[in-house]
Length: 146
Length: 67
Image (cartoon, each protein chain N blue to C red):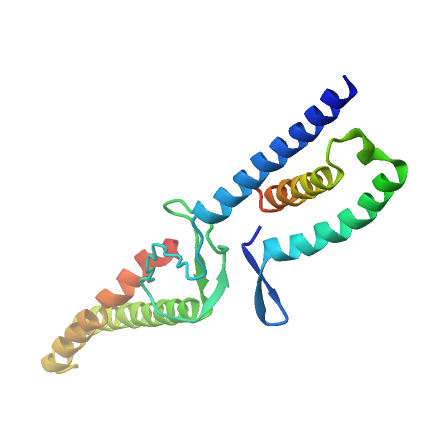
């Protein structure tokens, strides 16, 4: 009886060793592995509408983003300056326009012979020229976007 | 677990390192078991010792390699 138990214990241990050895051998022989793997990723090129220095990047690597998310901020000072410049030019033109209109009104009401007719027509043409230019009007309309 | 690891610039299979480590573990355990007379329970003491080491080495390697 004792001998049977001893043989059985030995065989059990031996079978366990054999199974584990077989498992490890098949793992090492048949599981694929490589030292030369390559990773590929889809790269999407993103380009802004306007140029300028990037002030702030609001995304991390591999972050999931949605349509309309802010990815980065382009230096806004230059564009604010350009806008203020255009607005100032627009105001100046507008003031000039009013002034010339006033001049035209005043001169056309003067008794005939005092100003030369050519002077009046020049003033009227000038006042038309001093209408706000189309580009500044477009810039003003674009302001809410900034 | 990587199949190989970098040992001072040379690629060494992880299983070889595990073999050395399991030998280092097994020798004192084996000495203890021999001293306690554990191997008298078995039919062939050397066979039991060998099987025990194989169990330790293979089982440990399978655990270490996350198989």
